[in-house]
Length: 255
Image (cartoon, rainbow, N blue to C red; front, side):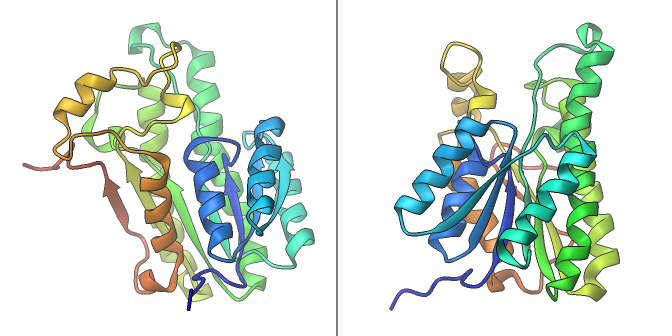
């Protein structure tokens, strides 16, 4: 008999219009969760919801720009109104830039930080009262291998914002444990998604990266979604404030 690990859960997944966020939303729905799909890309959201519903799952589309605190506040209320609870939050939405430090403008810095850092903060702040009222919950935030390795793959704002993600997770994990809310971080290596596209339909420096990865390939979105599923399931019930590195062995830190 198939056991659905998230039956009865209500999840909010940001960045659900494409890439890892989309795959995470679909994976959650297959496991029985009701999913509020949040993104600024309304066409992409509609497609994610369509795929979930076609497979027999339940999902709602919540169009919002997570860099806008008022929109995030409204989005969390919309998710609550749709399901009557929120027990899972996945902060996945992100912006990236490939400019070197010396070419990064104030606007470049502010845009990435507003989405990847401020946006995560807004989601944490606004979901808390709903999650507490739901009796607790699980939160997963997306960092990146570049936050630990200092890789030059992306620019300084992306690296800084992704370091902020696991810092926020640890802070919230310590404060919210008493409320039965667990907060963990996933730290992906290079993954084949729209935001890692170099503009020609291919992942930036794909072949060079694959040669440097012990497991011999860059990740697919489901490689990350399955780890997120573990972090929100009962199987990780004694984990909070932890960062899991999922990178095919590319960065073996401290070696």
